[in-house]
Structures are given as C-alpha cells and as structure tokens.
Amino acid sequence: MENEAKKRNSFTGSIGFVLAAAGSAVGLGNIWRFPYLAARDGGGLFLLIYLILTLTFGFTLLTTEVAIGRKTKQSPLTAYGKLRKHWKPLGIMACIIPMIIMPYYCVIGGWVVKYFLAFLTGSGAQTAEEGYFGTFISDASSPIGMTIVFLFLTVIVVLGGVDKGIERFSKIVMPALVLLIVIIAIFSINQSYEDADGTIRTGLQGLKILFVPDVSELTVESFFTTLMDAMGQLFYSLSVAMGIMIAYGSYMKDDTNLSKSIVEIEVFDTGIAVLAGIMIIPAVFVFMGKDGMQAGPGLMFVSLPRVFLQMGRIGGLVGCLFFAMVLFAATTSAVSILEAVVSSFMDQFHCTRKTAVLGEGAIALILGIIVCMGYDNLYFELKLPNGVVAQILDIMDYVSNNLLMPIVAIGTCILVGWILKPKFIIDEVTKNGEKFGRKGLLIVMIKFVAPILLAVLLLMAVGVI
Ligand code: PHE
Image (cartoon, rainbow, N blue to C red; front, side, top):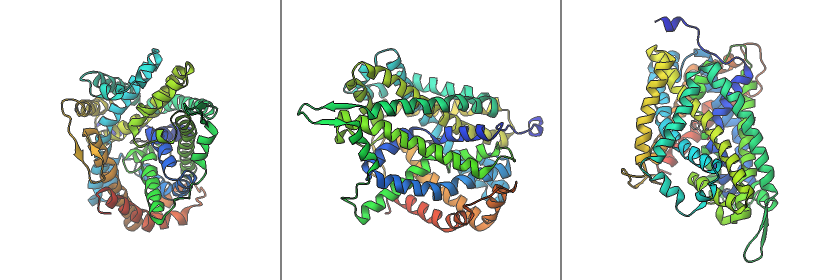
C-alpha cells in the first residue's frame, strides 16, 4: 500500500499536458486517413463540416473526459466507478479498448519502422516495387521483429513516468514533427509532373482538390455520408472514448486552465490534419493522378513510396523524413494508449509503474504476434457488417473503434449529461474562476446532440443503417 500514499504523477504544466495530449491525438489518422477522406468527400465541404464538428462535438467529448480525469484523479478503469458505483463496467470497457488497440497499433508502428529503416539505409526504392508491402507483412519473422522494436520504444518512454517520460518525449518529438511536416508540405506543393500523354499536373492543382468544395455531385445522401465520415474521423482523431484523455486529465495540475488547453489541443490536431492534407494530396495527385488517391491506410505503404520514387534522387531523402515523421506521430499515440492501461493497472491493483508497464507490454507482445500471424499462418478473410473484408488486425480495429468506442462515448454522455448533470463538468472547468465561453453549447451537446449522433454512428457500424 506504500504506493497509494505516494503522490500521483503529474505533468509539470500546461504546455506539457497539451503536447502530450496532442501527441496522442496526432497519429496515422491525421496523416493518412484525414487527407484521403477530405479528397474523397468533396474537399472543402468535408473540411468545413469537420471544423464545425471539432468545435462542437469534439470539444464536448474532449472537455468531458479531461474534466472527469482531473476531478477524480483516477485512471479510466477506476474513474467511472468513483463517480457512480454502478458505472464501474463502463470503466472496465474504457480500459479494455486501449488493451485491444495497443497490440495492433504496435504492429502498424512496426511497419512504419520497417519503411523508415528502408529509406534510411538507401533502399527506399525497393518499397515501391509491386508486391513489396504484401510480401513484407506476410513474412514469418520480420513484421514481428519490427513490432517488438516499436513496442520497446513505447515501453521505454512510459517507464520514465508522466513528467520525465511522456512529457519530456512529447516536448522533443512534437515540434520536430511540425517542422518535418511543414518542410514536406512546401516541397509537395512545388512539384509538377508531365504524363506520358503530355498532361502536366501541378501541386497547386492538387491543393485545389483539398480546399475547394466540390458540390457538383452533392446529394442529401452524400452530404450525410460526408457528415458521418467527418464525425467518425474526428472521434478517432481526438483519441476520445478510449480512456486516454481521462488518464492524461488525471495528471493535469489543478491550476491549469482546462478550457484553454482544450482549444490548444483542437487547434494542434486539426492543424496537423490539414497540413498532412497539404503534404499528401498534391504529391499523390501530381505523380499518380486522381486515381492514385484511393481508400485505405495500407496505401500509405503502397502509393507514397511510388510517389517518392517518381521524385527522383531527392525522393529517398523525402521518404526518409516522411517516415521519420510518421514514426514520431505513431509513437506519441502508442505511448498514450499504453499509459491509459498502465494508469488503470496502477490504480486498480496498486502495483508499481514498472510492473504495470511490463505486464501490459507482455500482453501487447503476445497479441501483437498473433496480429502479425494474421497475415501469414493464421490468414483468413471475414466480411464485417460494414463491408470490410477483415483479417485479425481489422477485426480488432472494428471491435474497438466501431463498436466499443461509440458505446463508451454514449455511456459517458448519459452519465455526465443526465445523472451527474453537466454542471459537474462546468464546475471543474471553471474552478479557478476561468471563463468558459462554450458552456451552453456543452450542455446541449452532451445531453442531446452527441448521444444521438453517436448512436447513428454505432448503428451504421453494425450495418443496421
Ligand atoms: N488519434 C490517433 C490518430 O489520429 C489515433 C489513436 C488511436 C491514438 C488510438 C491513440 C489511440 O491517428
């Protein structure tokens, strides 16, 4: 019990908290998924809807979770039960989600390590060869080795603790990430390419696809699809409903301005997503045309290496910087997933940080190996209700993101909106006399709009609508 008496770890101040939370939010979702959705869903229109949702829906969920964390000073596993005894099962679910995500996130992180190393050692061109990605992920040992490297990196950071590990790491990596993304984006806009048939495509034309709303084919149905795409993306991008923001909120100092920090996280996350769009869309458009911008996170490992190859000699360097940047984004996210579980273990079982990290590290390792084998010995194809043909990784992604996360988010809205009442959150946000401009908005969102939108998202995921 000696541990219980110990002071809870905390971030040293507001910048540390914001950078760590932004580090969690900024990940593969921003870098690949956002640009691709924006290009597909009518460019500027998607952006506009996304921004409105960030300022309303995203803001509500983010504020609520951080406030729950700071108020209870508990991990996701124990926070809900502390608020209301009978709500403990929601906490268990909120802790299971990062436990499901962690293994497959490390596998994808391992793929990024592999590509980074390939470009670093000058063999980036190979990654653009037909079938390279498929051959690599179905290899018996290499993906497992890379997963271990990525997991090891994450474990080291989290072992360092909140201020000396997570905060210190985020303070170095996040500015580096911004710098790299800006450099590559500027480079990308300035590209141009002449096709075999003589058509010249430029980066600026590509940029138009991203920013100019394409309403030529807009229908009520397509508007609804865009709205739901934007909401699903936002939900995932802000790292809400998986316990992370509760864990990070519980390490936030009581005198930090909570609502100001939330605004900063929103700006950071959206800013990086838009910058990623400016970086990726023009480059893919210039070298591969509109057809190059097809669906799927796997395409980051297939299309982009070809784009780098087309760039000629400098492509090797750009590719190396790009995958370094993706690696930064992925590690800070993985660190937050691990921390959500570690804080839960520490609060529930009163164990040391080291025991919790090694315990969850071992679980992630075993499940991660099984995920890798899903492309090799354990390969199968399963059609999910949302139409995706899935392997083990996709199933884990579907269960956590499409099923459990909306359920936890709806549960949180009901608990806070109807049982504890929104005043609970407002009091926490304004406890040092801070101004809280979007108070009215939060009340309406958490009681009515957010749970309804989330329920629609959930019903869509299970294939009912
Ligand atoms: N929010 C991250 C992104 O936008 C993804 C993420 C998922 C982070 C799960 C943490 C946990 O890519």
